[in-house]
Figure 1 (spheres, rainbow, N blue to C red):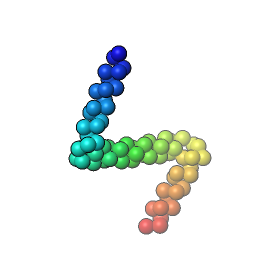
Figure 2: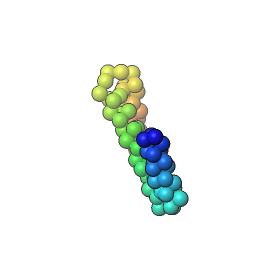
Figure 3: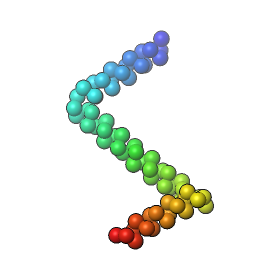
Figure 4: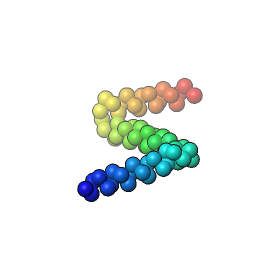
Length: 68
């Protein structure tokens, strides 16, 4: 019962923002921000370790910077 009420409330709030163009645009910006944060987190995790992923990220960043 509690989950159903929570779902209905969440769904109504979501629908209100999606039906409102300003709300939809805000959701898009929030989603874009979360993607950027996720990418930054992966880069930070890769740089901290001595893994092949970390070395690959560092090498690609160096190539991009030198290409400027």
